[in-house]
Image 1 (cartoon, rainbow, N blue to C red):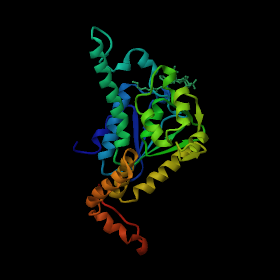
Image 2: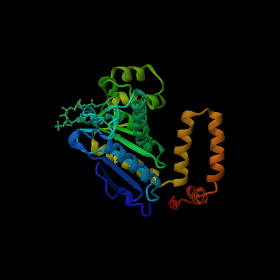
Image 3: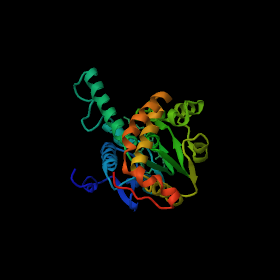
Image 4: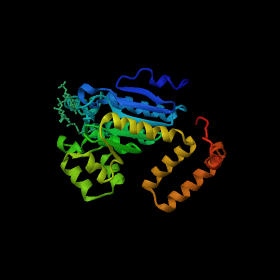
Length: 288
Ligand SMILES: CC/C=C\C=C\CC(=O)SCCNC(=O)CCNC(=O)[C@H](O)C(C)(C)COP(=O)(O)OP(=O)(O)OC[C@H]1O[C@@H](n2cnc3c(N)ncnc32)[C@H](O)[C@@H]1OP(=O)(O)O
């Protein structure tokens, strides 16, 4: 990848803009189908977030859905019903035996999980603005984001049991880590009951509720702008160490942090930032 602009050149299902110099805004771009995802879309989403992770100009990302009706209505159920569920290779059909069919499916699910997981693996913090319909895959995606904001009109559902599936792209793994492995998580995952923005905030799934999508975008962009003014080295480390702390003991995390910072404390950013408060100077940091 020679130029960071190159990987964004031929986006079909996502729109990328830059509301401020180091902030990227990614919009899911299939509003006429409520931003429902088929295979080409989740593959493209993986590439977009991989590219953003490596893009030195980008320090924070906002993710939202195009259109007024919703962030995302989940998996494209029509494409899935037509057999696309197993990927374009059409595993499960034809003469393959059970083991080969299973292996094909396992790979397909793994690739799908991998693409959505690029949001979590992105070195830059991702702020998801959840508006209107946010069903199924929308929750998998939201759980990978670092910060979730909701619009008052948001309608959430961990919808998978309604379409005959145990959710397999991350909600069952990550949602309990986000809000705790509570009775509430079991309730919403087992029933697919729709819940709203206030309930989402009460349980800690989202950190704010905004009146309208426009206000939500302003809030998300402002948060991303604040983050983008910090040291990119410090921000990347904070995301990485918080992610590590989710899955490790305090002792393991402290050890990891000491090793991480034994390298990162040598960054010029520390010198640039250390005295900026008392000197009343806004620090400016090099690209990362
Ligand atoms: C290996 C497995 C990996 C991943 C699994 C993920 C699991 C999930 O994501 S589970 C969730 C699946 N989603 C759904 O079941 C939602 C289905 N949609 C609806 O129930 C309704 O559309 C609605 C969300 C309640 C909204 O209803 P309404 O406001 O009346 O809008 P519509 O007219 O129904 O929709 C507008 C337009 O969008 C199309 N559409 C909506 N959702 C989907 C979808 N999930 N897949 C494909 N298309 C969808 C809908 O057909 C309409 O398009 P038209 O061309 O106008 O028909």
